[in-house]
Amino acid sequence: MTVELEPEPAGAPAIAGDRIDLLREFARDLGARGEELGLIGPLEPPRLWTRHLLNSAVLAPLVQSGARVADIGTGGGMPGLVLAIVRPDARFLLIEPMERRCTWLHEQIDRLGLQNAEVRRGRVEEYHGAFEVDQVTARAVTALRKLVPLTAPLLRDGGEMLFLKGASVQNEIDAAEKVLRKHRVRDIAVEELGVGQLDETTRVFRAKIDRHG
Image (cartoon, rainbow, N blue to C red; front, side):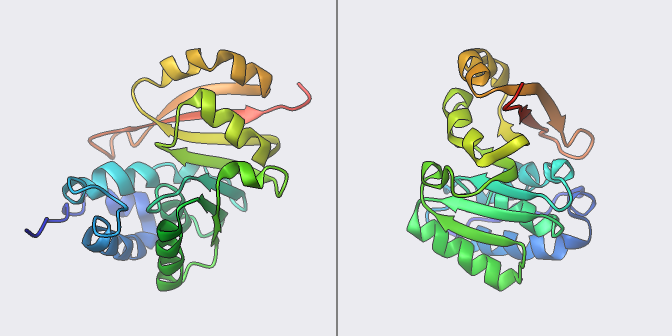
């Protein structure tokens, strides 16, 4: 049975700007091959744009120009590869432990001609101390109480966390209180992205590391 890919929402060009054609190419390939490769589930193609691509792309305005960004558990490319497509002025390290997903990411980077993304295979803990980044992103990886200890060591002093979260994000923040304090996480905010652009808006947990605070 052929599963129909969700038609491109009317708001997509405004979100992706002059990178919309590249995002369309990525959408077509992910929709056609994603389930077969184990990147998305069988129910995802009919909501691929809304629930995955644009849900990731609306994070782009929060990425700093010239920033070095680590995306944790990139999987099929959300949000890291999507952000690399729409923000060519920043550099993205896509950290993913599963070999077949890394193969897919390498293939897409080459196929789309992206000069600002590279894949690092492995678990995020393996890269603690290996480099520092300005920002770190994650989507559907784990709860904040586990995610903060995994990602905080990657950030420079003053670096920023940008984590896409669901409706229960405040409960996650409350449960992570001790962890947030231990890792000197400051300026915590939850922002709603895509208002007026998407039927389903995106929540982002946003905070900074203050090692000397």
